[in-house]
Image 1 (cartoon, rainbow, N blue to C red):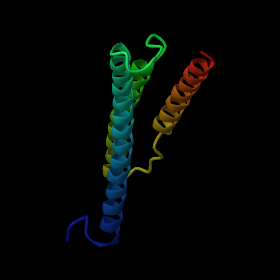
Image 2: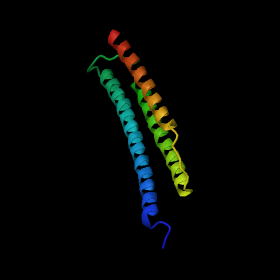
Image 3: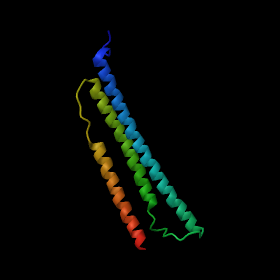
Image 4: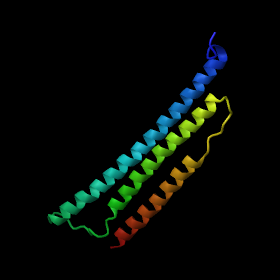
Length: 131
């Protein structure tokens, strides 16, 4: 009888499946961040093009959307890379039958990065409203 049969094997399968679902959730988050960043950067480019055509009046120098877009894309990239490292670490521990509590660094890093981007966006918008 194989080692994976029975209740212990079922538990190992559930653990590996949960680890993979967690990886996929983090990957979806990273992809969403990158897509949102790309959309913000492209929208800023669109506004600049419309302003140059004389359709609307926009403070082209103060837009800053390209920087926020790039920042969100990099945050998404960091999220996906960190998720892969976390997945492999948990998988290795599961294979060794070790109990492991994954490090909260990924959640802290993403949360802190998102807060910093949101503060910068709020400052940029508040400055734009004053003009």
